[in-house]
Length: 426
Image 1 (tube, rainbow, N blue to C red):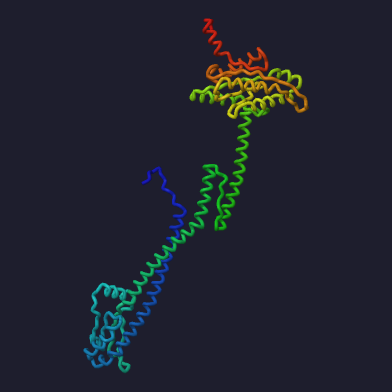
Image 2: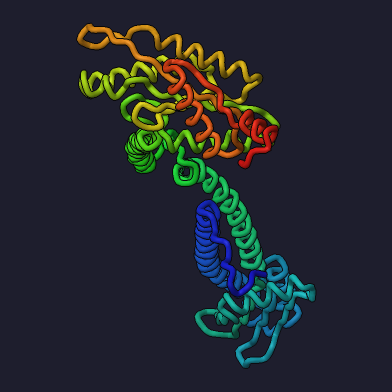
C-alpha cells in the first residue's frame, strides 16, 4: 500500500488501449447477444402463441363430438392423445355449462419442467381460451396452458451464444490490442527512448526509426529534424567551449599552456610524485637579450622569436613533458617523471644547442638568440610549486650571471650543506 505522500503508478498506454479494446469488444458482444436474444424470444413468442392456437383448434376438432354427447372418457382420451405430443403443460375441456369434462396435465416435477412452466407463464399468452362449436353453436370451451420448452431451449442457447461471443470478442480484442501495440505503441516507445537518451545522456546522434502510420512517421521525422538541429547546436557549443577553455589556459601567441595551466599541472604532478615516490625536474628558461631584439627590431620580430623558441623547445621534449610560457620571454618545462638527474641536464643542453641555430624571419633576415636555463629538482630543491619555481628561477639568474646561453642547477641543497659545515647563521 502506498503512503500518503506516494503517487500511484501511472498506467501504460498499452494497458489503457488494451483495456479499452477489451471493454468495447465485451460490451459490443454483450449488447449484440442480448439484442439478438430478445429479438429471437419475441419472434419465438409469436410463433409459440400461434402454435398453441393451432394445438387448441386441433383439440377442438378432436373433442367436439365428445363434448356434444357429454362423453367425459372420450374427451379425456382425445385430449391426452394430442396434448401428450405437443408442448402443452395443462389442458381442460369444459361443457356448455362450465363443468369440467376432460383434464390433462403433464406429470413432470423436474427442475427443467418448472423452469419451462415459469418461462411459459412469463412470455406466453396464458391461458388460451377457445370455444368448442357444433353446427355454429357453442357447446363448450377449451383452456390451454403452454409448456415453454422451446422458449427455454432458445434462451439457454442464446446465453451460450452470448458467452461464446464474449470469449471470442475478448480473444479478438487482445489480438487487436497487440496489433495496435505494434503499430502505435512501438513507434511511441522508440520516440520516448530517443528523447530519454537525448535528455539524460546527451545522445543527439540517435534517430527515431520509420513507422507504418503516417502521423506517427511524420512525428518521428519532425523529431529527427529537431535532433539534427540539436546535434549541430551541441557540436557548435562543445567546439566553442573547447575553444574558450583552450584560450583560457593557453598563450594566444605561441599556443603553449599559460602560467595558470602550468602551475595546476605542476601541483598535480607534485602530489603524484609524493604518492609514488618519484622525482621530477623543473626547467626555467629565459631568452637572452630579448629586450634589445624587441626594442631594435620591433614587436613583430620579437613575436617571431618567441614563436620559434616555443617550437624548438617543444621539439626537444618527451611526449609526456610539458612546456609553458609563463609571461614575456620566460618559459618553464616540467619533466615528470624523471628517472635520473642527468636526463634533465641532457634535455637542457639539447634546448640550448638547438637555439644556437639562426632564426629565419619572415622578411628573410636571420638573427641568433640564446636561452639561459635554470634547473630545480623535486624533492631536493623544493616540495611545493612556489619553492620549486623560485629555485629554478634563481638557478636561471645564476646562469645568466655566469655565462648566458648555458644551464645551471639550483644550489639549494649545496648551500644548505655549506651552511651546516661552516656553522654560519642561515
